[in-house]
Amino acid sequence: MNKKKENPKWIYDRKKDNSSRYTLGVGGNNFLICFGINPSTAEPNKLDNTVKSFERISKRHNFDGWLMLNVYPQRATNPNDMHEEFDKNLHTKNLFYIEKHFKNSKTKQVLAAWGTLINKRGYLKESLMDIHNLSKKYNCKWYCIGNVSKAGHPHHPLYLSNEETMKPFDLEKYIKSII
Image (cartoon, rainbow, N blue to C red):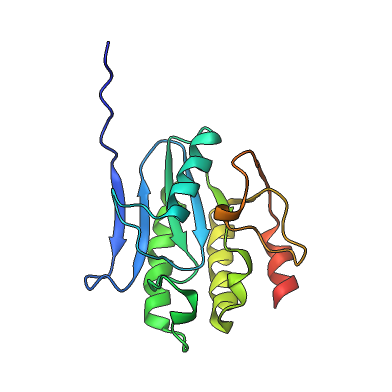
């Protein structure tokens, strides 16, 4: 008996001019939320290697869906091309989508996966603090893949073995260590 592969139910929110992406994922009853620093080129049916890695992580840990969010939503294939100055309106819109998905998530499991890029711009740490406050409001549980780096950063999924497992990540302690 041949099984047809179901078409995924894409979750995709972006700015009309495609300069920013707020959400990218596949819906499910038990989905994992992942945070990177900023989105690159990935979109439905055209995932980049980072999002493909995250998709594999979510499947390996028995989630039936996944959602990629970012600390800052500006698209930039090179993080050096991110805004030099903080765009408050862009951040506010990002928080709107983040809260929407925190509120609607049944499992409230969140993967920290930004690596050392949190240091790329000063506003990223402040943005992460706002995200942390929202996650506390919705009782989210934070995880990382594998051990944190020597400096305490959660690893980016591209640079880890597929065998690494999710471990609890103390986001509050982490934020205090980087501020």
